[in-house]
Image 1 (cartoon, rainbow, N blue to C red):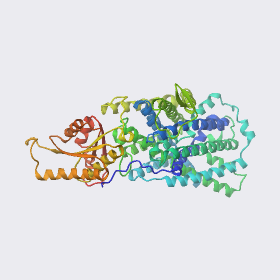
Image 2: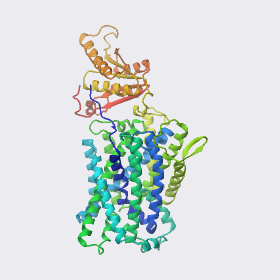
Image 3: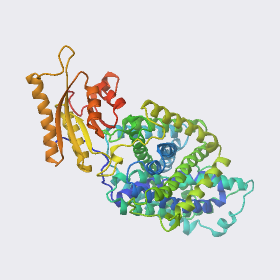
Image 4: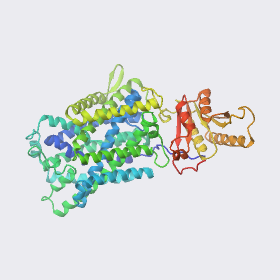
Length: 627
């Protein structure tokens, strides 16, 4: 049996997915608290609590969508399915923006916590914090390019450490720092503060709860989405909302707003939790304060590194979904043996995130601009995701929904979740608020979206696809439907075996038939009809026998044939049309990349001219010897 290129495997249990969720969502407070305090001041705990409740409401719709359609892509996937590919692209492109901002902020704040742990002021000052951040992002990308490794065990240990550290910090803060009087005094406008500032803080607070999209992107890799996704999402989100609100209350008690500012948004903007530790000095022995300071610094650096890593993984999975559906160039949608996801996607994401880090450092840490830009993307995605869940209730009432975002109300005879009906207008309202109050959301956000639409239109034009055309990969087709016949052009060797194994596996999942052909190119000086030379006939028969053997081992119906033609590419396209196949499976040898082109002329021709879907597996260098 031939080897298979490993795809997205269902390997994540509840604890592993909780670690992924917590590393993303729980890391937010390490960089978001100071940013929110800068605008909300004494209202910060209320703003974070209200935003956290809204986040929980949105999570209900996300879990219904992800468990109903457990595929990589998250909100982009169920938005595309509910509306069309253009709506899916808008959702996905907005989420790309959020991913790279989270990667950049996590990497940018990491050296500040590391500097606190090591008592190194150099790490907390420019330019070394920017330099370290760039190296962190580059290191994550290089590690992902070298080998795809599952980090869920490590993330679980980091999440456990962070929970212990934050629990200790909250306990000490409640015992020695928390002051209901100081906190209640903050529930009024500080000198120089206006209600516009408080309204400005509400969209900014969305940055405090990142990571929901990353969890949804792992739906295709979850062992039991019906049970694992709800448990992981709601346990992590609920825990983070409580911890974030308590940490904010303790921080504002220790550093109350004075003269329209707070040290959490000034001196400790880049490491607000470390600032809270310093406020314990005088209430606890110095040695104990130092231990807590080092623990918070190390925990903060580790959880931010984990957040950047999982954000890179989530972003590449989103790129895979969009690339495989023709929203981005197909190079972003392929799977690879060594890296699993596209190398081009890893490199592009890392470069954009590093660019954001450098620009932020040059702009003297205008992190509020990044936070407002983040709110632009996440609020578009949240609103469209909830509308998609509502629409899917109408358009696909029979879709299996292991988790339903109840309670429901009936609209036009269809049960619709109250959570989505309430959450969608709220997130849309906060989006409007962001556009009114935030320069980043108002100007940079539409520019990013316009640039994305150009990419989308050019990609569709290049591939000769309609803007609203539904371009779907095989993985999105439910088992037993979608295609009946799979055409696999055979050749001798490892690549031929891989293609036969891939075609048989896909056909077996969906009850389809495999049609294996060997195309023999006949030079023009010879007639197309006539007997084949013995050596050629033997090679063709051997290739087809390989396909037949693999199919018989798996109980898949197979027909084989030898086709004589002047051009292999033209013959494959013509045979696919004549046989009315629904899928063509092709392999691409690594040698073409050394010749400044990704695919061979045959594969290029089939991709541009085939009437049906084409699955191309591009093998990395060194996987097989060139044939």
